Image 1 (cartoon, rainbow, N blue to C red):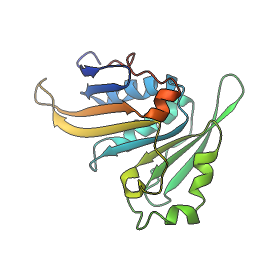
Image 2: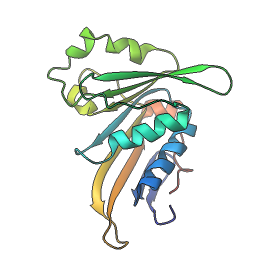
Image 3: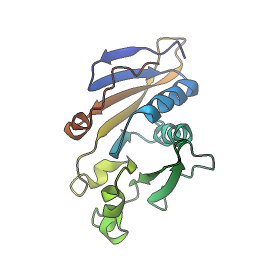
Image 4: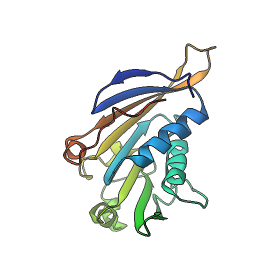
Length: 176
């Protein structure tokens, strides 16, 4: 975990290098501590680690069961039971196979976004960006080669939107 480094660091923009799956898990655990509601858009090529990050994130939030990829179902719902007795609704969406953004209205996707306190993690949101409201947080993952032993790494850029800034999100404490 100490092999990671922060390239950029500010309250609303953070770029990190993930050199291992443990680094991905650490990032997910830190994301789980943020008071996130609304949507988070995950971008990146196939194999960049979007689903892996989401799996660890759901586990860090308190989900104990399996985490299925929503590639074919478009959305997988989760009810996360918190220590304070409340339940946080989390939806994991994968829009890679989406043919037309209007399909989202047919499955009632707006209801997920309108649900108070819900977190909607969306892979491939760019396929419906004209349909979706702006996210709270953008996460862009790219594969790269780390300087440490030429091991494949992930560069992750996190950017808080204006909606996220209004929620008081602060990325400056994220470290790997």
